[in-house]
Image (cartoon, rainbow, N blue to C red; front, side):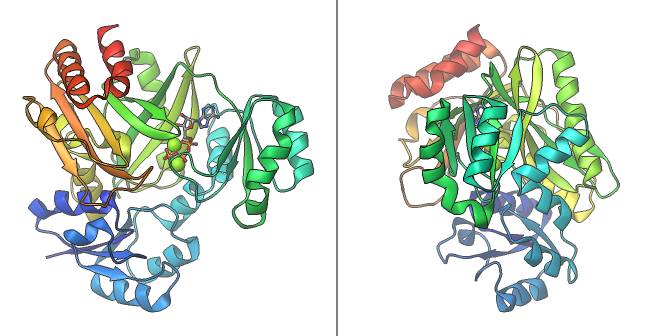
Length: 380
Ligand code: ATP
Ligand code: MG
Ligand code: MG
């Protein structure tokens, strides 16, 4: 049997372990907290990602390593890569964990991006706001997730407030200013590349965020074939430039028919959770296959799927489970504000049936607002 090591023990590691069970895989998970939810399914090593002793233990117990968490320090990933094969490679991880490096790469590859500028000082922030214009968003270059580490500037008057909010973090994690994109849609491509360079994507997904956190995903996204082809070509050129192995997601904004790349996630992604029940092969299964050098499974989808994220606390499972295509995922985490604690996927053969199922679930759970944009898209 092969033992796969995962750095980070959240719900992504948990779903990787569940997907790996039928392949006969064993797992070891390194996480900084003893109650990491992947620990319920795989032996946990508790230690800091920079702790050599913990990394040593981890490396000695695994044949190959991958990530559930993109912010593992690059030096730790590089140290590990000298001892066991690590996928994606540490350079890909380093690029994807820095918003400035990833946007610079996208631009070099000819992929359109929102206006951006690095910001290290207050003076640079003023200059960048003058150049990019408002509205704009100041973000930490590293360590941000779920919209954390961001400040939106409506006008040049907001420079003080933006610097007060994030300036102190500039020396440690770096800052970047981005033009605010008045997008019509947010889309993502979840893609997978093997060690031999085989490349596949799942159908494009449309995503809705609330307060910077993913709320709902719909696949296939209602986009024309040309736009889907462009998005897939962008994902492919990024994967090839980074010699990427495994699953990643490319998040994009669609505005006036143009796709602007927002960021990439060097791991399985929340906008691909619907693939567990909505596709022939899930993102978790294909990530493991890629990392292990096995052939990829088909990524075709089965009908239409919508994923709803449960943030903070789980609602009642009954209304989802009562649906023919309803699937429930409880991550086994304790409730906490802003925390992703589970998700549901609804799958149906037709868009109309999916819209009806979503409307029923939304009503039963008092979550009409969460399902409304998806229902509207499906019926529109
Ligand atoms: P994730 O949890 O996806 O990793 P994150 O914290 O890394 O999120 P982003 O994806 O950059 O942050 O931003 C979160 C959301 O905020 C985006 O999905 C989008 O809805 C909004 N947003 C971010 N940047 C911009 C922008 N330049 N213009 C318009 N909206 C934006
Ligand atoms: Mg991100
Ligand atoms: Mg994002």
